[in-house]
Image 1 (cartoon, rainbow, N blue to C red):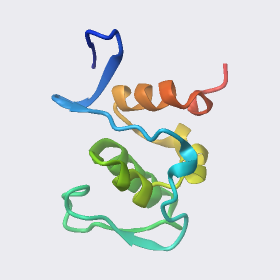
Image 2 (image 1 turned 90 degrees about the vertical axis):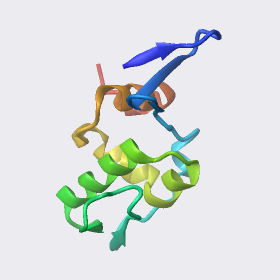
Image 3 (image 1 turned 180 degrees about the vertical axis):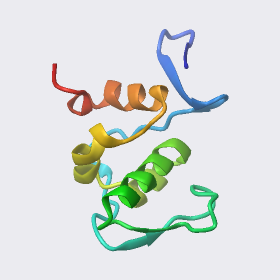
Length: 113
């Protein structure tokens, strides 16, 4: 769901009352691109918060959670890698507003016409 502001800017919501956080550039996203990581509980409420980035399904699951739950830019920078994000973007299962917000800011993520 998206709403407008008095400036005419569209705000995409990750969930009710939570705007989607989008990085200014994919290049600033310098998170890990391999190995094992453990997300903080704030980003992943499941007791098993450890992800092997070599497992494609776990990598997608981790990215989906971070993109939905991040509220600070440093969280995006720490956990998301811009090159990996661009590669896996078509496979991510994201709420429509999250996908729209990221594709609006980063047109290269949009599917080819």
